[in-house]
Image (cartoon, rainbow, N blue to C red; front, top):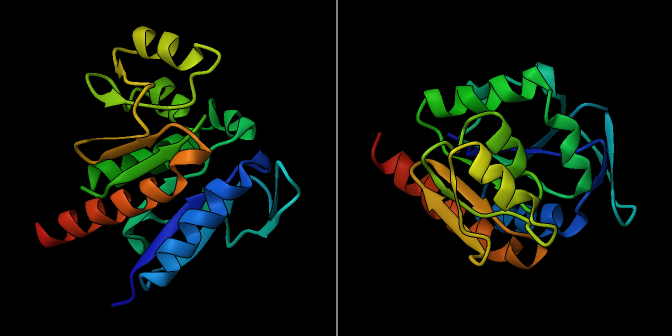
Length: 178
């Protein structure tokens, strides 16, 4: 069976390297990488364009082994997106790991996915730590990558490589336990 992973992108201003670098690692490891967003084409902060495989509301979690939420300022567009929230929760309900990098973990906080969990995320403005306190998570902004159960969070572009490698380890561990 071919291994498939879904990357969720903001429609605008996703962080280009937080998509390109992990995607390269996943493809090199033999994963088929698909993308989803609120629009058919997503544009990164530095202009990289991605024709998305799916609109977020079209995704069926059973087709994928994991889901990786790319950060950047645009990821805030998902804060109140019920389709995205339901999708990430469906992965967890089905014992499939989820990941988010940079600003994207803020959505996990708002959706209640990080309650009683350790997590990291972009925090140069202090917002991640404030949200973690508000939503019952333990903020670890000094860590590049934090894994707690089936959830991996990473703090920014400098964690792109490490987050991809650690998420693949998490996917492999989870698959072995099935």
